[in-house]
Length: 433
Ligand code: PSV
Ligand code: MN
Image 1 (cartoon, rainbow, N blue to C red):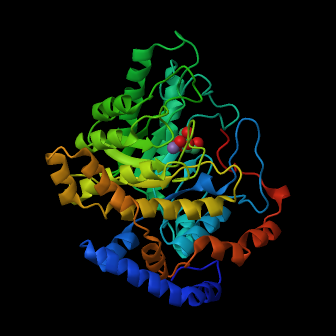
Image 2: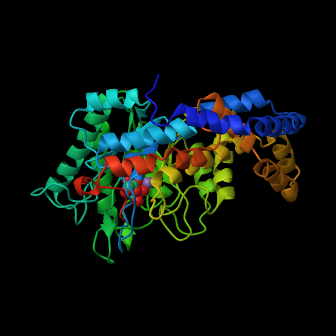
Image 3: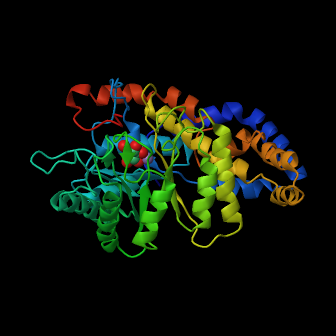
């Protein structure tokens, strides 16, 4: 049994106080869903089995290039980050795995870290390599690129870091590596657009050659930043071309914040599924760009539509389909644990609602070219209030009836502020955009 950092009694008191009303709400929802042909127990099993990973960099306060406002009690090392991840998992019961970024979180003893994490009820998800910053004094600089640099020695160094990630990940029990590079140009003419891409594929092939059996390699595309004129892996088309050139172990990862405004992300998702190259997701939300905002905080309907594509692939048992899910957001003004709790539930909510879509009726509307009828089928699922179902799934898994309220009542952050004095803080907190 995992070591629990939040007092069980507190959770029991919270759910006890809400029990009668919750039973009532759940019974009403069950009746409504049964009328629509859904079995609540089957949906509860789906909610229980759903998981989204937490990024180790997500439990630190993020920031922008204009500043960062660290909060009290921020985790100062990997073990403290794992503790915060364990709090999220204990309360929401949707996030049993953690994704590490190297060298931000290079474990000295990966096997010991794996044991400590297991003690907290956590395992490890995809590894992430950071070749978008210079970390080690004296190393070759990534200022003008990493895996696609014109200098072969820089490319070699960047490949070597990815190989190190694989080794660490192997010891941690991970089985995937996500590669996101900041490579690109700020000026027309700065990089040769085709040759840089060729070098990218060449470096990726070297990384793929070192993957243990069963491991997957995910390529994350991004429209811009830190390169603001062109990026080497800019869009899903480039990502798909690179993944195809590398081979079957390689697929595309979609970060929701990495597209131009108004892009139809669910369509991209559908295409990648169809092409057998959808590897994973970084969930977040955005109004103007990148991964600045919490999942579902701006466009929850878009999140649902993305999950509709995912669930429809799962229903159809599309061969090889099994994307990895991670939250990748920048928590600039919130307590990251609070954001992660709400975001994890938000993503789980979109997943469950997608299972409420009446697929047969949707197919019928499509066949009859009934545009409004079809869209109403989706709306009917989206507008269903599934809160009692998600709460029940959490309670059965030993989580909190209401994660945010339980977290606030637990005093975890206050205790961290006492135990983790800022003066000793030395590690990278979160994303500084
Ligand atoms: C890049 O913006 C990104 O989305 C990549 O996933 C990085 O690994 C992560 O953010 C952290 O900077
Ligand atoms: Mn990302």
